[in-house]
Image (cartoon, rainbow, N blue to C red):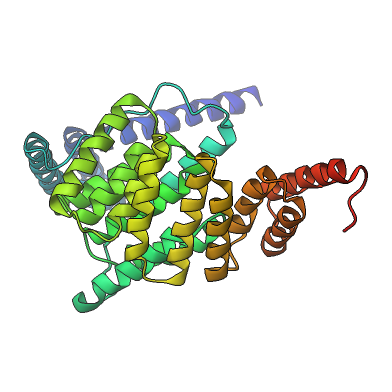
Length: 397
């Protein structure tokens, strides 16, 4: 029994060593040549055994072994030739791409992708960052633009419609699945612009806080678009938001450069004012952001887009302590898009500041009737407490 156990251990060890040697050899072109030569040697060895033998059945077995190793050798050697050609083509393409990227960088037509900041955003859980990293990995695996599904004359209209849907999506990221499918079926560079915009939305955490790992992946998509078409306006607009969303100084420096680039090549781009709103809001320049909001409204094409811009303007007015105006903006947004739970939820904050608790409670309940989310429930509890204090007891609902 001990002998059988020893033999099994020896055989397993030899088998593992053989598998390890085979795998290591297959990892390089030289290794594949060596492995093919070894198979040829084995084929010759079995062939000689078959010639020297005197047992017909044994000779047949040796012949089969020789044919088997000869087949393996041919597969490895011929495959190595094709693999080598493919690798040389890939290296040539990579070298050409690297040279082109360096040229575009030197000409100022693209900007470098900044490194991730050393410290994560404050108040953000590792779980939230991990979720964004997972989203980035999933988007990276999508074959963007590999199978174009729309005729050339429809591409721009399809892109604009999908982009408008993304820009008005808030809270429920599952709604982005439709636009993702559309963007993946568009040709370059627009497929990458769409991917960058989706990644920007998926990087959102709260307020003006975004996960840098998602923003960086979005910048990679935007860079691919600009590599295909240098200074592509749509890519620059999205790149501006991706860069300014990270508070690191180098990211902010590149955001300002991007703003100058897009203002030079496409000063009348319909989505530039919205990007400028975000740029100024993140930097605490609320007055400038309000002015850009008014410009953005002039370009809005749908009620949902108008509502999104008005809601954003209301948030800016709140930062300026202009709460009465903020409530009016939120009300206008709700009249255009009454099914956006975040607009109803956000309207509760200026109402609370104004002491209009009953109105705030109605807005909170309207938000929760559309979508149940934790921050809205927490705000509702806060409003109930303030109502109780105002009334000197439990509020009458």
